Length: 420
Image (tube, rainbow, N blue to C red; front, top):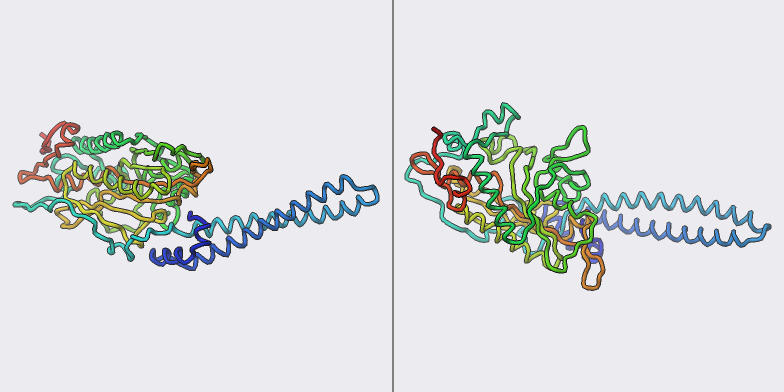
């Protein structure tokens, strides 16, 4: 949730952010009205409670003749207190609903527009020119015994798969390399729960516009996570953190689940858009004034991993209309996919400032010992989709695939060849 003081002081900035996102700026006025109503209700209830308490003291000191009249006043005042408290509770609920309807306020640098209106920040490497007809990742994966979509669908349905043989080893190697790099850069490795309570899922902003992407257990009030960002954000919910020595960095290795609602017919071939995948996700808690610099660090660590897998990629600054509700700014790294002749997202890193922490009550103490809202950030360090870029960019004319040097020791071979 956004800072209400900021909203009161700069409502036009929030309206402009809503407009840039393609969301309703009128929601700002709904929130302002709800804020005024709630503050008035609190003041009224507080005043009546104080008056009732003072009258109670008078009753205790009153003479026998005066007490009946004072008791009648007290009963009448108690009824008013009850009504005022009911109004306060309803205004609290209205304020919370209006507050949650407003997305985070975008950073000034964010480009306007939608999915295709990103700003190109950098391009690294040149797309490879093949002297043979390249195969796509699924054709390679099947011929090399790495991916089995047919049996994945038989066992679990469409958009599920098996990674087999060296396909499994390649993913494990990639995730292990990410884990090693994370720890070398001061991250604490975590294997978190993949089921979370609704307040944690809502706290990270995933039960808003994209709630239809989330799997919910029918018989349990629990959700399957689409990223370990969610449990890592919930890890310190309701706590006051010690950030005196700098940011607290965690890296979560987990399976992730997404319904991919509304994506029917898109990327149905292979493992680009699937219902289950594995990922190493970076997550950071820091002071708000450190968030921009930390965001750049997350991007740099993502770039190091992409360099390690030796694929051409570009870095883009995501436009306002394509940001998630929690992010003020997001950078994506997209790798070149030869058979599609286009760049596809492999990593994403978002600065969420205090938006998630405000929902999850995550604070730190400033230099005066006063609790303040922390900032949170997240970024992908490796995920299953990377196999697409690795296989297609490193394929060879004989149908084999060269394993990037950084992964070869972990995979156990430097070339993937057909089994037997």
